[in-house]
Figure 1 (cartoon, one colour):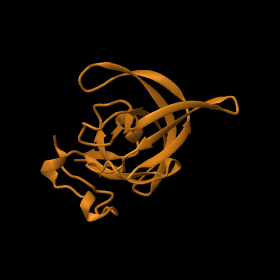
Figure 2 (cartoon, rainbow, N blue to C red):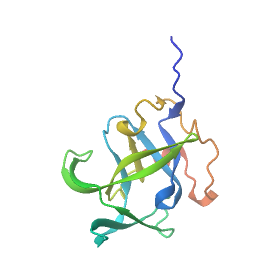
Figure 3 (cartoon, helix red, strand yellow):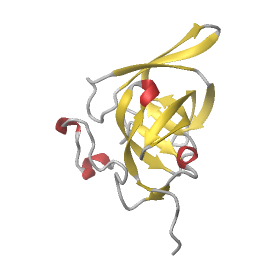
Figure 4 (cartoon, rainbow, N blue to C red):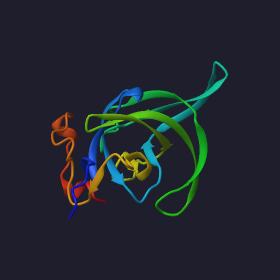
Length: 161
């Protein structure tokens, strides 16, 4: 087997979205999804300096609907995206910086309700392409020690729904 020059990441990792003020969010690395998605609610559009912006709120920790982060970003686009159930949904798209494994780079991120999903964030294949090698048999290869409080931690069987 040939050694890959790409750093490995697990099927789930803690990432940072610094431009959105999200210091940590657990993301499922989903190579089956082209785009990345973030759980967002209270989504509102507004005009500023001739540009459309989107304002939204995020609950970055699973099973914690109290800790809320408010964020604003320029609207990049609105796109039809098929969810895991095969249903199309028109979603706002923003561009933001993601940080993982000491790297920072821009990604396109769709905003949608993921409250009922196992993860508040999906990092799709476009976001990790040519940056990481995904090791589907492991978790948290880049962030073995999350920084959130113990009440936010969950066991493996609770996360896989």
